[in-house]
Image (tube, rainbow, N blue to C red; front, top):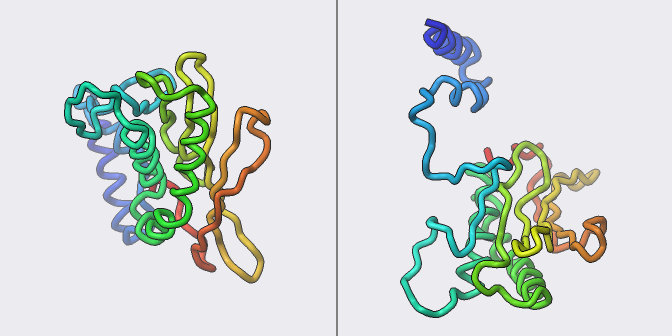
Length: 199
């Protein structure tokens, strides 16, 4: 009976506010039965989404060769970036991201893999689910043999007076303790406040 009151309350709020206030996703997940839990994502204690050799998201032909760095790292990195952008930010900045920012990200990933000794058998992986709201994290490049991050890619929303909002793409390296911002570039949003990530 409690479930019906929650659904009724959500419907009343939606009608009274004309859809301006939308319920959080936590409400919807609590209303769904427990046996309909999503089975397409791996369940881990840290809610990590690990994409590498064992990923099933990207189809690969079965070759006896080692997968390329593009299959193992670049494609999952781009997918996680698009996931971070969501359906509201993605269409606006995707073209500039593909042309300007992602080639620089690819260079950093490639040099990191080279300095870490290669990407044999999925030792170097793209990990971490992108963070939502206004948090910075896109993804991390990790070495699973020593269980540590090598590079962390972030995007920060900056408001510049008289100019508007920009997305500042940058990365942090383990060499400097993840303290220094290494800039990849900026993408202009507009003078209006941008939506939250993953929206």
